[in-house]
Length: 171
Image (tube, rainbow, N blue to C red; front, side):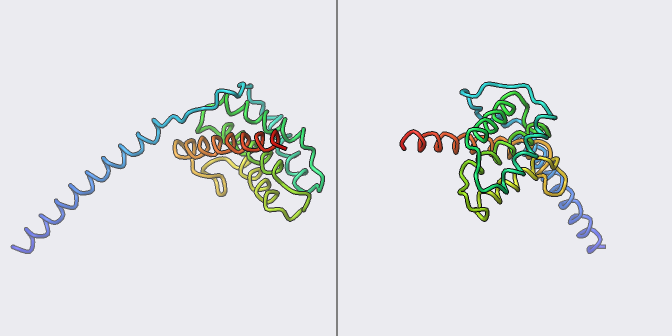
């Protein structure tokens, strides 16, 4: 009898602990959903064009294997993708694609003529991620968490572009 009561008490305590953990998890998920990161104010929003994005992905994939890179074209590609991110809502596949295309263009801008340059490999990975929906293998986390990850990546790309512009002006 005593062991039965002990077991019932233990099960009750476990149920209460699980309930409290579920509530905390729910609060954490809501907190992630409500995160809004500061967007870049110096980027003009452009309507997203899925066909143009697919063409840009194919072009960036091709350029990753070319020793001589068209710097002006890559800057325009990064600018176009940045404009798409400014017009899209984080957490969507289109936003995910635009952020990764921007990353690929920025990596190619930083690449040397060497085909084994690590920036080229990162650019290839960005293009692959751009075409892989969040939640699928290789596509990053889905939903609100993926949206926050994409926002952080987008802000990082923006910062990298600012550094590149400053370096270019200094030389």
